[in-house]
Length: 464
Image 1 (cartoon, rainbow, N blue to C red):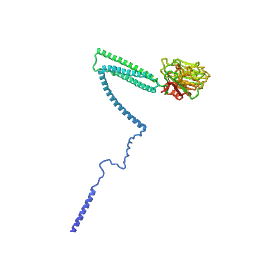
Image 2: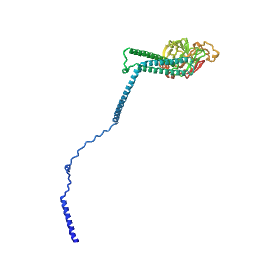
Image 3: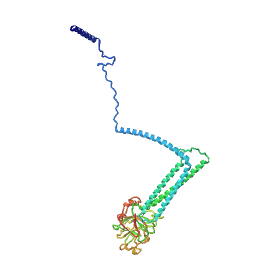
Image 4: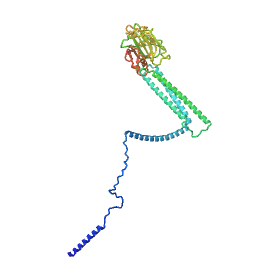
């Protein structure tokens, strides 16, 4: 069994071997493809250079700023265009409304403006009369009252409010007149009027309204001028040159004066004396500043005589006079006076309002003011009158004379200063300034306002 199977196995193996050899010879593996893009080692092409991609350059800070500005400018233009469009639309609609209003109420607008103008004029006139009455009533109140300055300030504030109200109402009238009688953009009525009597009547009505508005405007201007006049009158009640106090001489009396007690002796060969005065009335001789002793009561005198100012050194024979210094209609404003004198040249000068108004050479040349005298404001010791029991004790030893009431000063005085030299024109001009602090800062070295002791007598008193 085995022996006959072995030849069969060997035969089968031989057949398999033969078949395998025959298959290897007939089948060949072709690895080549049908495409003709084969690249050989001998024909290797060079790589084609490609273009370098664009690279943005580095921007400096100025480039960035300009770019931001351009962007902001574009946005601003867009916003402006948008706003302009909105405004055009709104203005168009507003113009249409105004045209309809004018066409409907144009006839009655003038009458309304005239009525409003009359009412405002009456209100302003009433308030102005009330203010003037209060101001006149305040003039009769003694200015010695400590609250006079406060009431004056309140009055000025009220007048300022009245003036601002006048201006605002005048502005309103102007706007009403413009809106009623102007013809912006060719205003047309929705229904055309006939060319007959209605047009003439309308023109006549408009003309009458214009005349009424002009009259109301003129009345307002007149009211404004009166208010400004009242304001200027109120300012005249204030103290000049930044001074905070003054001496009030309420009436003419031999007992009303102010004695000045300098800290240094008055043995001087030159000096300058300055003061502010606001007299109530001026007589033939009204004493403002006086210095003298028992031998000569008229060593220094600064006087007023009607409309003139006078300045004497060493007696009435050495007189310097300036005419038309005081207002002839009555002194209503503060007046600044200065008198200067030098013994070396004998030159005496008189100043009013910061201007030299009189100058005389050879006045008391070589003279020396004696010490030990008496210095007064508003009076002089002339020995005319005997002492009364009530006035005893007011005299200086060896100089026990009384006062003459006819020479007394009545009014208000402030800024009294005295120097031991002749001041320059520029210094006196600064002292005469009503506004600011120039006059208050320059005090005298012999008599200094607010520093040197001054003793009021009788009814004289300090006010602020």
